[in-house]
Length: 123
Image (tube, rainbow, N blue to C red; front, side, top):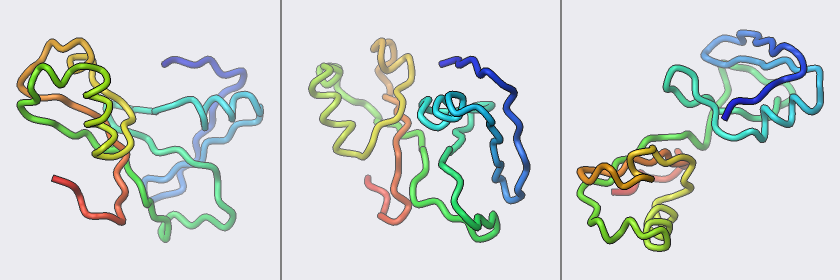
């Protein structure tokens, strides 16, 4: 998704791979925070509202986005109802690659999922 901001976005490097996005316009802020997934160079950017007294060195994430592959998923499972149940049983789906959505790849299915880092990974 491509959005058009009313004003320029200024990024301030806070160190440790954290940036502060400075936005003066409330509508721009809403678009950036609620606008969906953000990727830069194929890497997911986690966005959240600024917390008071934020310290990059002490910051933690409870959730991250992770690409997951489901190998050899039978073709009949690509039914939207079945596929949705499978995906939600793994966690919170964020994005599905275009090959999976068009059923053009049968070797594996690729999904971007929200993963809770406080829980063990599921097999």
